Length: 460
Image 1 (cartoon, rainbow, N blue to C red):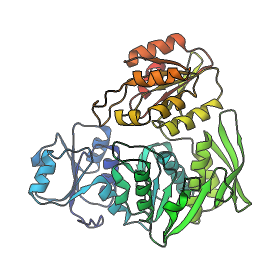
Image 2 (cartoon, rainbow, N blue to C red; image 1 turned 90 degrees about the horizontal axis):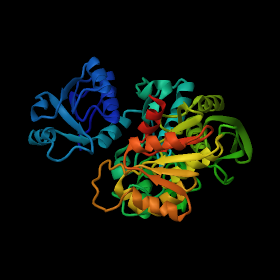
Image 3 (tube, rainbow, N blue to C red; image 1 turned 30 degrees about the vertical axis):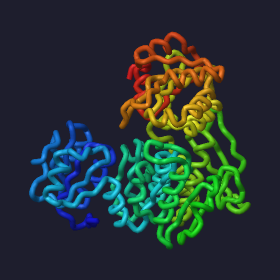
Image 4 (cartoon, rainbow, N blue to C red; image 1 turned 180 degrees about the vertical axis):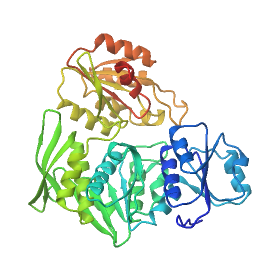
């Protein structure tokens, strides 16, 4: 495979440069003084910013966008085989790198490269670690999958040897990475349009752990089932964390929640209290994320003061139990949860949040996930008082499975819950305006565009 030296390479062309991840990778090259070109369907604030830094941006994808001075081409998984720029690059025998391959090669240029993986919690934990790294003045380079207020976006270009990114398992993209510190938050069945089953997913996480070098560290949730399958035969140091098990290297004791469902707890190690940690984000799942962040930063010899302060400063990532506002006494929260485990975690946190009636407006994400986990979705959503379903958000799929949100509605009804389905956002918004009352808590939930419902209600 072509290996890039980001300190010496020629012009790199990005097909789909306007995406959040691709644009941040282009920024890294531009910060090193390298030449960048790229294409996207239309202009956006991200592409305009890249143009301002000297990138050559083309709108519309055409073969002639691959100029003679292009050294290599980076593309996203969404690019089809008949893309004219991809075809032209192949015709010219130019080196081709997927986004994941390119990101993995960038990681090799850093002394400390942290890759945060797991079925759930990647964005939040990456953000927590980033806050600690910033508090410790390590000047890190950060790539995160959501908007982090403290860096004013989803990326930060630092000048040190420290790098942190999310490491997503979908299509095994994280197996192209080069972490010196790997984090595995949890492992559960998801992305079953790609993976065969849970065993297949576990195998991929095992392969990810094997990427960590002997001098590196794996920070992993002690509560993962059959943990030894992942950790056996690793040459790197293994560090475990748990919200409850005292056999883990780092665990929580004396967990208490305030009236906004945010936790305070003792960070423990082998029976010794290391620190008292206070969080500004709700739920027991964020205690686990904070433990993973603390364990990761302790492995880097960062101080407990910086860890506690960094975690306390973290006020949440975009679309993670994010308060959008209030209207008519109804509090509106938005959350990215799109897997049954995530839904349960979010609704558990919501139970401890002040409210009269808990409403959940859920937009299922992809037909394959909805079909494979239908019973689990119904059980999780039934934790709310009242459920409103939107149509399935197709994302990368087409409806070839013959299912709809009506099928999920029937499953929830069978559990004795009050559940409604409306095919349009306008109908959902009208229903909510008529039926929500002062003191209610309304959560819009899903990985699609369901956030617009709450924003429309608030007039944003």
